[in-house]
Length: 176
Image (cartoon, rainbow, N blue to C red):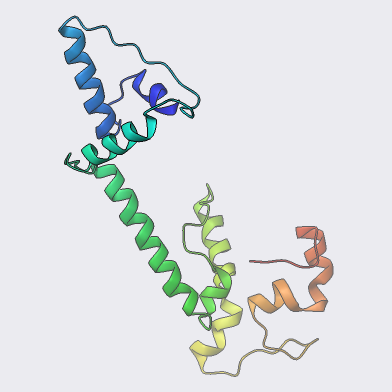
């Protein structure tokens, strides 16, 4: 049924096989042929059907078909993303993998300044958490938990900030 629907309207982005069929139909119409398609829900029980299917399959093996660029591109992009994801999945010790386990784009926020701040929070970059690296000081420690005082610790782990998480995110467990 979908093949008939496809042939019912011409589209420049149509698959090359559909375009070829429409071209043949137009040629035949110009020669005064009247071709009518009908949808047959099932061909079970029609004598000679298996033979016709076998002959059609045999004949189609000899027809060269160029793959449309769109199909080739879609295949390669899909394959590249799949390979990229496989390599990314191996890097479980990478800090960024825990922040973004699947490749692809983050949703872009309409205000760039907010987008930059959210991105910095996701990857854990903030002045207070990196100042010690710049000035050669010891890493800051959470006064409550005595854990490293990081963006991740404040936003996700520290019990001191649980009430703030509930107020802002309506949940005590948050993911970046």
